[in-house]
Image (cartoon, rainbow, N blue to C red; front, side):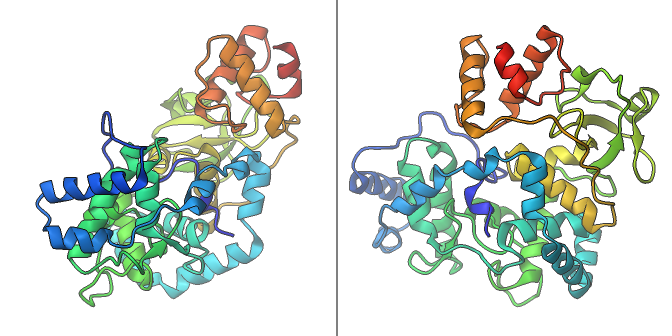
Length: 389
């Protein structure tokens, strides 16, 4: 199953937010505006007309954009759903099959194999399910839609640039609903900036060449700030008398400070780096220290549950033991989470969209209320918290 197609926050690496981006209105009029802007950017009228000749609004893209139910799952359920024994075994096999490519990636870009293997697995099941949405239709549809036009409109012109170089077909290029292309799902701007001809055939073929796709993904992670030789996530044990309000990505401390508080690695040693204590399902569930490279994951995808799962799977592929699931407190259903978000809004918190997803803003608000109410401030909402509110 392709979970990349349902992500709440897609790759943002090469996109600069634009103020007052035009959107909405008649679709044909919107496409004409895109054409005029493309011509004003120096593209020939003939090329522009050919590029947009068959573009249509895609209702399936809009439907997929609004379908985010999978991200209402708690970490344990979500991670176990994505990390099957088959996917793990295939990942280990792919690591051996493409060992030379991964060695080149690590040498050139500093990204270790497990990181890209996890993305490759989650995004397209190692290239097996890359999406069948017409990429241009999806990009123009999402540019016209007024939810996030600042993200998608620049991708239309990047696709036009790829078309001019012979690397994009307006009618045949397909991928994810959000315009990502290839085995590790890259947006057109990212392909232009970070695309790599890894197999030396003179073309960047992200759909058919695993070498090209993996090398491009490695370069993109380096571009986003990945630091060579540094870890990203490490499972730890935490004392029961911990100050849980220190957990969360908003608090970063040297690992020695965490060690002084009784935080211990389940395997190996703590890295000599700043770190955050991450409790994806509260203080009774799995616990991790997140190092600076963990932040880079959010440049690839903005979903906390996806990022934590991808980072954890990467550690598993590189030899880490399965997490200690613990015995987390019962969480909230999707409807209960929406009720919680509305209550938090009524108290003045900015939780973003009321969507039933435990995102960063909701976590911060939950932690603040837990602290106020004298509850363990671990940012994990429970029915007891909902009742107290």
